[in-house]
Image 1 (tube, rainbow, N blue to C red):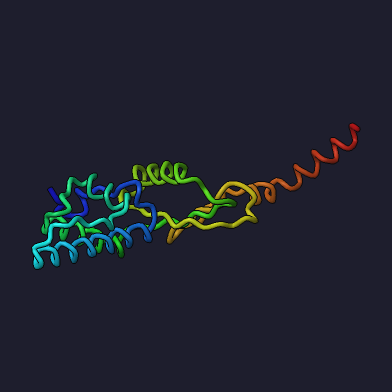
Image 2 (cartoon, helix red, strand yellow):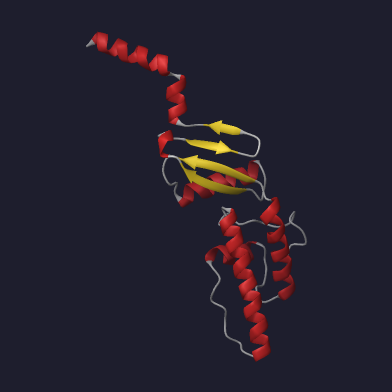
Length: 165
């Protein structure tokens, strides 16, 4: 059964970013076009252009990809999410692993919003940790900031260490 609104809709953990969302929309539109053309030609060939992300999205929502009304309902929900889903920007010093991003995304979707999307960036100068931005907040959890805030303590410890040697 297709979702009637975005409240009953499950955004799969495989859809991490707005790019993933746009790709799923594009693939569903291509599937619709293929099925319409196949029905006109009376061709029963399968469509092979569906990624694992879109397949998981269909599966999580119990949608039969061959059912036009369910597909259209899903496309409507995805189109509304394209403009309304909250996006959190997270910058890391290095490229995060897919499993780490999915765990982070799962936490955000449980604690903040079920349709939240991530935009991941790289800032090697933060050394370690991350920087999180929303439309109204900025959180700096980087090693760079921590070291800057504790510069006097670090200098004192280094001087104390030199004095002991």
